[in-house]
Image (cartoon, rainbow, N blue to C red; front, side, top):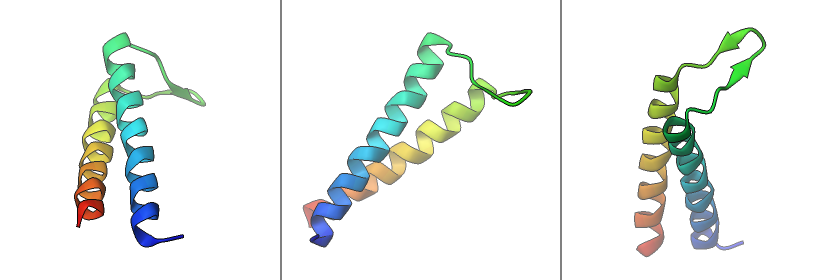
Length: 63
């Protein structure tokens, strides 16, 4: 696999993750791991982190 293809696939998957985090915040989907309810602010952090990495990946793929 060429590096550019790998970067594009990774950036696309990170975009999907960021969109799912955004959907959770917008639609107020509850998430629970064991007995711990995951707070919404953690999805905001995850959305920003995944979105930033996806943006970096797409900019690297353009080069």
